[in-house]
Image 1 (cartoon, rainbow over the protein chains, first blue to last red):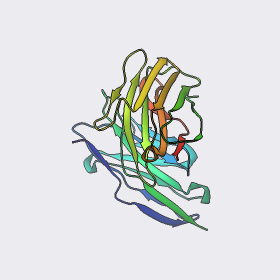
Image 2: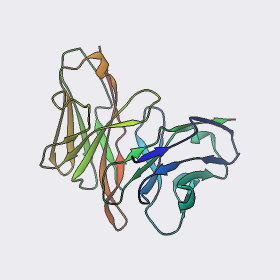
Image 3: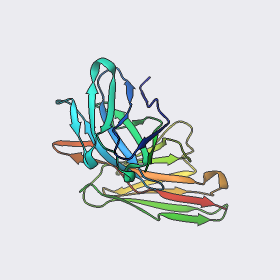
Image 4: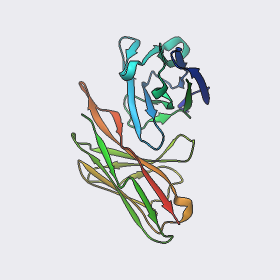
Amino acid sequence: AQSVTQPDIHITVSEGASLELRCNYSYGATPYLFWYVQSPGQGLQLLLKYFSGDTLVQGIKGFEAEFKRSQSSFNLRKPSVHWSDAAEYFCAARTGGGNKLTFGTGTQLKVEL
Amino acid sequence: GAVVSQHPSRVICKSGTSVKIECRSLDFQATTMFWYRQFPKKSLMLMATSNEGSKATYEQGVEKDKFLINHASLTLSTLTVTSAHPEDSSFYICSADGTSGSKTGETQYFGPGTRLLVL
């Protein structure tokens, strides 16, 4: 079955420190991959996406993600975290021919000042 | 671009009443919209896929008679929670398939969500 796994439920980092949020997928073929961020009581905002091509994807708010086929991973990174980055982050995937997103369980990011 | 709105943002209703939530794509047309339910500190659960001009496709375990979905135009889908009960209290989020660059319909854009509280 198709699935998306985010191994870390909670992550705490200090402001200014680097961040990496992990995401692994299990699909028959390489899916389209997405990272979304959700602030408390809000909908989801798209940070970045990967369809094909360059495996390092740049997104909004200084985030980037790297697709690694050999590891079935699509980890999200940010070199220097800001307090406003505290939120819930969701990795999601869909097949090229389908329209349903499969979400990971989310990673709650806390930023210490 | 690619803005999705939801109305209302919050609603409180009495048990047994019905509540309608609207989802609009503001600057693009969406033949497909999706409705999700999110429980506290949980991921999103897809409830149904809404296609313009046709019946919605519900996920397994979702009561179609309780959660009525109508997608009357390319920019509007509605979710009606009928005879709401306290267990229906939740955060409901819609999304719409939008165009991203040269690819059509392959990126979902999400609304801000609707908080429903049934007393």
